[in-house]
Structure formats: C-alpha cells, structure tokens
Image 1 (tube, rainbow, N blue to C red):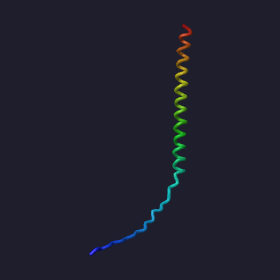
Image 2 (cartoon, rainbow, N blue to C red; image 1 turned 180 degrees about the vertical axis):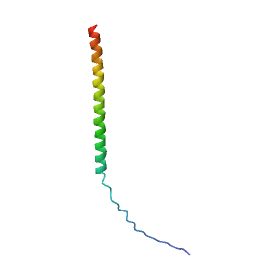
Image 3 (tube, rainbow, N blue to C red; image 1 turned 30 degrees about the vertical axis):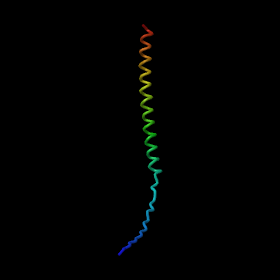
Image 4 (tube, helix red, strand yellow; image 1 turned 90 degrees about the vertical axis):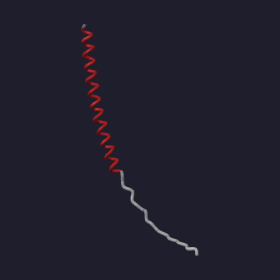
Length: 63
C-alpha cells in the first residue's frame, strides 16, 4: 500500500526596512567633527614646528 502526504504553508515574510538616514547623518556629523579636530591639532603642531625652525634659522644667521 502506498501512502501519499501533501502539505502546504503560506508564510508572510514581509518586513519593513529601517530608515538608516538619521543614523548615517549622526555618523557623518561625528566624522566631520573628528576631521575638524584633527585638522586643527595638525595645524597647531605644524605652526609650532615652523616657529621652532625659524628660531633655529635665526640663531644660525646671527652667528
């Protein structure tokens, strides 16, 4: 005797995609803030190094 089984199922897999725009804006703002801070720090460091080099040059020119 042969038995046959049959079944069917319907599954709703619809889901909403979250809006990532606010999170991306936050990340962008944070990145821009970090970049601005890094630029400011690097500018200050380079200005200090330039001042030190100018002072050394002035000492050698006066010798």
